[in-house]
Length: 166
Image (cartoon, rainbow, N blue to C red; front, side):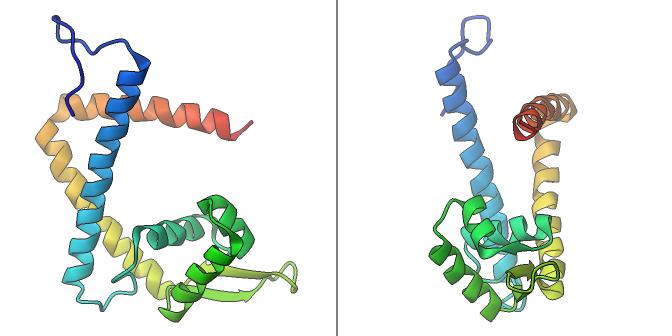
């Protein structure tokens, strides 16, 4: 989808059109990440802990990794799924050796999940492959556009940080 432009090459000042363009371009970026993930997984021939995981599972793994450990109820809320769905996903990730399930040190009645050390290493390898893909993209758009892209994303991050502190 090409963003509608005015005769002077500036983008239309319609928030809906701008949002549509940002959303569509975001999907292109997501698809690039997915292609790199599936390519990385295929090159791992199933050896890596992350081989064969779906994007929702990768999202669950990343969320858990960022937080250190989460309960299934917390994970379900973050992912926007029901606790039984999150529990099923966790069961599968435990079976694959990606997650560890254990009793919380703070509250022995509470069960938490964390990312296994082997999976952390696989995640780092995957992130390296995806980052390399983004380096290629950044080089193709050039330094000036890349700098502007960073400025825009910094502004978006600041808005989200403010919203998250409310």
